[in-house]
Image (cartoon, rainbow, N blue to C red; front, side):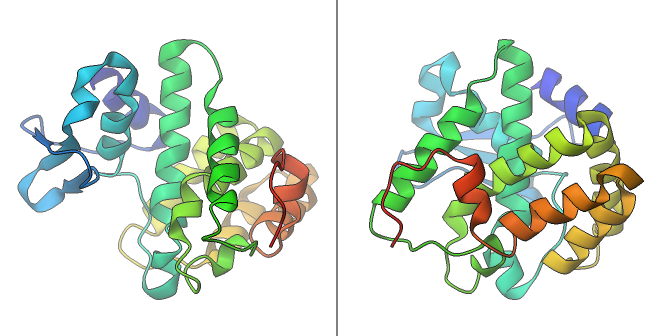
Length: 218
């Protein structure tokens, strides 16, 4: 957790996360979650059974300080909390493990989600309207990964730090998000960033271009 704290503070803006944050084991099946008011992170007990499961603790820790504010159906899309947090989790785990395997994991999980019969293919900005927030953990995180590939990791981190500061106390929207990153991108990357958002946020083209589809679209 010391590594995670230093990584997030150096890449996405300093947050004074209290050193007495408590990690509480709870029965499996309830899902892990944070309670900022009590400086407590509740983690499913199976997480503590293996070092391989530490990503779940990392995921919840980053929720304590590095998510933009969102409201209503925008919030229910889970993009501004879970897509970003899953992306952070991927970055940190790749740094710890020295290898990149999370992208394939997210793609595989997204295909499993789509094969479950619970979802139909819709663009990310409609996830909240359809209560499809679970898809932001996977498709949303991959969208941010592809954005990083376009503008570079350093510039992504710099823009994200500014974005999180801008929307720490006021609610963001998908339009805010897209315009913010397009405007902050270098001139020769603006059109590519806009195209990526058109593909991912406002249409389903991104799923077809960037995720290996092994399901039949409904």
